[in-house]
Image (cartoon, rainbow over all chains, first blue to last red; front, top):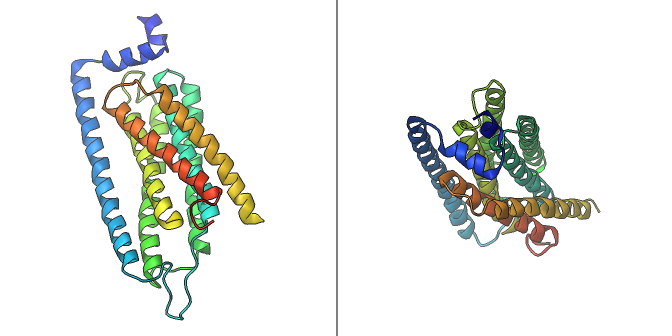
Length: 210
Length: 64
């Protein structure tokens, strides 16, 4: 039993996942379904705001729109946003590595990749703060500013909550809350972080490339 | 000059992250279970995001 518990092959990972007691497995599956439904509801939330952005954008003859002084607003900085996007996508990769290392009972590597994810997430937020400071639109000055700050602000809030969540998970994991076979909190955190990444894919295209 | 440097950095990072994400997706392709299926979907979309960054960095998208 002790030898198989230390086995870190993919088969052992799957076996540990499946060989938990029935009550926990049922609870875990229900939690997972509930969490996926929550993510779907968050997708609906973002979809509503994205629809509003597309509607407003298509209702004006020029984009970027022309401000009240008759000057067309500049486009957002694609290059900086591209780097910031890579930071966020990279954090998704490090989160995946953290999760894989946890499943394979490599706690030191898990800690390293988890910290990397947290740092990258905070770096992304810093990049957003810099962009908010340097962008030449305001929330109330135009539909471009209103939609930009609303959507990216909502996304940034999700990232902030995600960073806090990851810090809590890191502390919990190091306090022994999770084991090699019972780690739903980590699974939920990973899914949430990937979701936050994917929402940014949509926002990056809509605001910077379209 | 700064914009060119930024685009270059973005291109390199996107290739690294996109390649890593795609490789992880390939490795985990045969995994089962709802959480793994959702993870695969999200990894795939992240790799697509890196493709968008590459296209933006080389000027194909985003008004070059």
